[in-house]
Length: 111
Length: 113
Image (cartoon, rainbow over all chains, first blue to last red; front, side):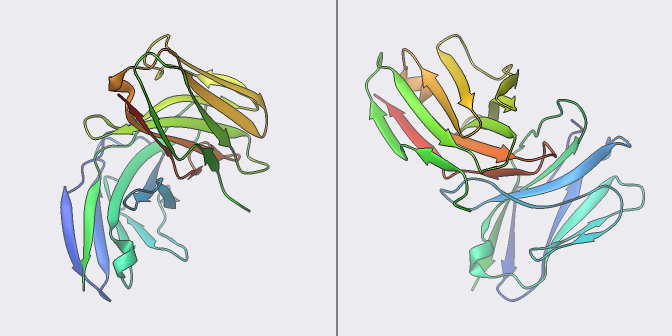
């Protein structure tokens, strides 16, 4: 897996957009960018993934730069329930490729 | 769907005892994963199965750990004998088609005294 770099922690005001950056400068052509989050005392939760186009679902949007060396996860209207550790992972969908969770970004939503 | 079900949710045992953790994946999912999470080491993949067959067990720490998947709806992770350093939260996850979209269970918090 390509290595990712994320800030250790971030704060965001409730109701504002939370923008979580991730650097993955060594990503290869067949590797996707995945985002998971882990709310305290729960199992990780899949959020979204993408290859090179921007993606949006009911939870979040994923913006991937044209060179694919970085991406941003956007939670459009953060709520207190979005307080969690967010993991950015790069992995291909081929063969026995596995997810490798790093240390992630601890996002705290401030009331 | 009920999601991934794990039991027990909490387990406290003494060093040397056998521990068995159980997992029921989401119906229709053909991948099953076992992870371990500790403060020191974070979230680590121990082993995963595809269609009930173990594919990669390179993360299993040592021979004291074993995992089985006798059918598509049930898997176990066994530790025998248990040691205090095995204390952790153990997560089971399942997936379908794409290996990397995984659905995690609530975890089992294991404490070995």
